[in-house]
Length: 222
Ligand code: AP5
Image (cartoon, rainbow, N blue to C red; front, side, top):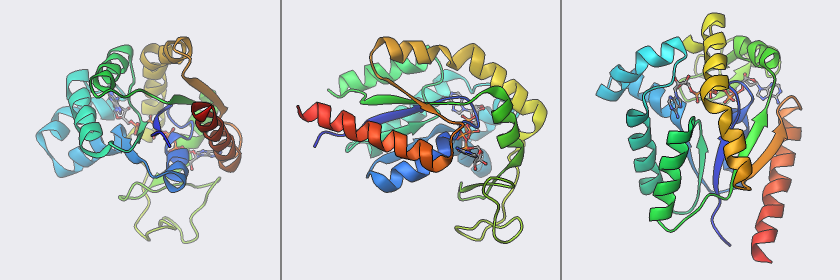
């Protein structure tokens, strides 16, 4: 069966990370999440982390030259049997860099999975999101932890991400609309875009994505 090379697109808080956690269980794919990788660099105080942190805390994109090298290296080292990219590409320059890389490897994208959600839903979700240091995600209302402020999966403390403060969320949304949203048309024109309604429940969104991927795989075999 051919490999699945997928990207997740959509505004902050649409549920990309939530769906990625489920898709990783369904398919044996390398999961490469730009935001998680960058946050790890920040925590470890690496040179990349020190350069990235001020952009992230303001809700701006980290400069392309830092992000592109980091992600392409990950695809080469971990993505041989397929990958799920979350948070990359985020502009056309990054999309073209990804395409060049895959061309060079004789590979191609299978699909761009676009999880859509309006701004007001995003703001409500991100203000209630809590994340542990292992990257597990919960929500104070939609997925409340069994023990207050403790992750259901690993028992570590759950915290509000610095960039989930309301004023930073507004900036992230603005950055998304100005720099990332055009990728929807970019991938639509290439026939790779698949749309999902991110306002449905996590299980409904997941079922829809799985059905779409099953159809894509069947089509590839015909
Ligand atoms: P990143 O970590 O990639 O953040 P993001 O894209 O803004 O996405 P989020 O993680 O906030 O949202 P999500 O869609 O994954 O939502 P989630 O599933 O958690 O990037 C952070 C920063 O890093 C950027 O701002 C930038 O500075 C930098 N960066 C990253 N990539 C870069 C790049 N390529 N180039 C340059 N800079 C880059 O869901 C949200 C909440 O809603 C959760 O609490 C969840 O429980 C709940 N929820 C999810 N789905 C549902 C549902 N269906 N119904 C009800 N609740 C739901």
